[in-house]
Each structure stands twice: as structure tokens, then as C-alpha cells.
Length: 88
Image 1 (cartoon, rainbow, N blue to C red):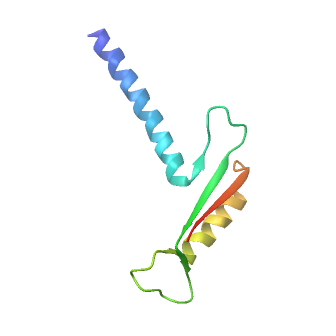
Image 2 (image 1 turned 90 degrees about the horizontal axis):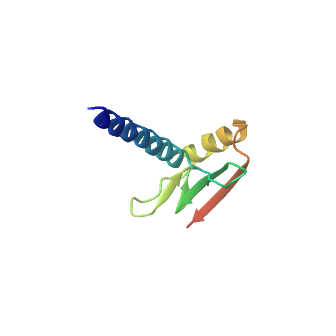
């Protein structure tokens, strides 16, 4: 019975670690074990859609998604760098 509890608690710890990694991935913040700095990765895919609505077959990143992300990155003191990936 004790072995089962230990195994279950280890599984819960792994699950918590996996959740924190997934949350970091969703937020765009990537940090390696040996890294000294937190770098935010912002990906722009296709054209930036703002004033004009582009056809559905075009890959776009919405303007209203980029601007709040940039403001949030600027205001977050834990983020020390920004990497913008343009995939157009």
C-alpha cells in the first residue's frame, strides 16, 4: 500500500511538472535548465491581418493578438528578451 502511495505521489509530481512545461509553452516562454535568462518567443505566421480582412486560404496572424502580447511582454519584468519568428 505504501509503495502505491509513493508511486502515485511521484506520478502527481511528474504531472505537475508536465503542466508547468505546457503552460510555459502556451505562453511562449522557453527556458532551458542551464539558461540564465527567460526569453519570450512570439511567432508571426503568414500575413498580419488588421485593417483588411484577408481570404480564408491565406495564413494570418491577427493584429489584435500581436499588440496585447507585445504590451504584456513589455510589462512583465520576468521576461528578459524577445525573439520574434516571422514565418511568412
